[in-house]
Image (tube, rainbow, N blue to C red; front, side):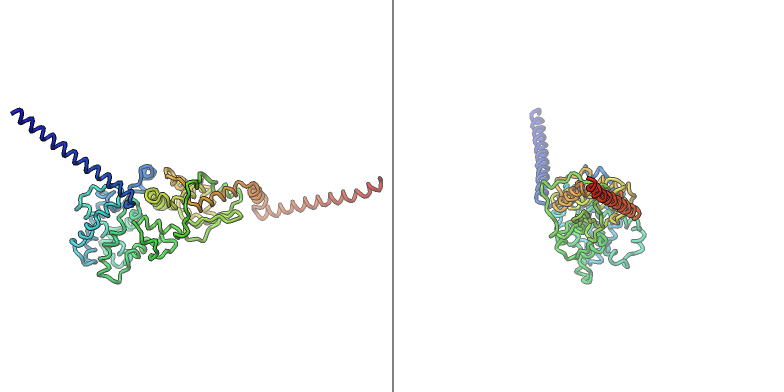
Length: 441
């Protein structure tokens, strides 16, 4: 009897060990697959690293709607979660399709969608597919209502209040709150099949985010063939044309340059550029820094932080947006710098001088920065050399102390003329005295 019990427990121990071993194998396999996704570049939707997130949690966290798995299930989004079901039904009617067809499309791309996220998504297959369908259908229907306002219903207006509309746009541009662009495009194709007069999905998206396309880039540009999600789209809106993007070298590191007021005191002139690209800063010979006009308001920090987080995670060697905000951080130290740029009509101040300076200064905190793109590196080098030139500083002091106003200029010129007249008289007197002295000799 004892022997049979011993055999029983021994077998159970062996089974338990086998189960634990199998679980461990699965876990290691998942880790390896996650690592391969990173190495292969398939991952494109990230959780914001803690060292960045802790600086301003709200800038990275959705407030009214959850898109994708990272904030899925949060009770504060219940109102719109229920309304997503309504929009899914509207989408099926619009596309003249059924749940079976939609599930088939999403399941066919499930592996590719999961691979887009930095973390292993714990939702089972049914939960994951349902979430993707609800979120994608909501986005498509909402964007189409934005394009065709006549399609808004009384129920829409009752649920989606103006303040929700305003905040939802920001939530769509958070790095942690994204769907892969390709699944939205694939599902939208069902609409195009039944409504051939509708525009391609990229044009629908352009219509919604168009106010951020300050360079008026065309939707059929090659740049937009490789969009990975909405944050990536906005980054492309802000970037200059691909052929003008400069490379970066390991030694192109800029530790610090002078702030705007220091540069102005050294004689540097700040001028509003006519360029439509925010990143298009130019240094001109003779000491002129041209900066495209930009606005800082309550939404700027959300855009800036999420774009910089995307570059930190996905484009570390092409961090052009990060370079731009780091350069602004160098130029703006205090409210005086904000006031100077506002006076030059370069900065539209929507937050107050102190708040703007603090916001800009905090953007660069904890950002992993190794080098700056070559064009900005040369710009920084040129303005530092301009500031450090004694001749430029003397000219600036002369202009500031003696020619800053018309009256000072008149007084200075008058003083110079009086001095010149006095010197001339003195010289003439000396010359007139010299012949008489010679005769006496």
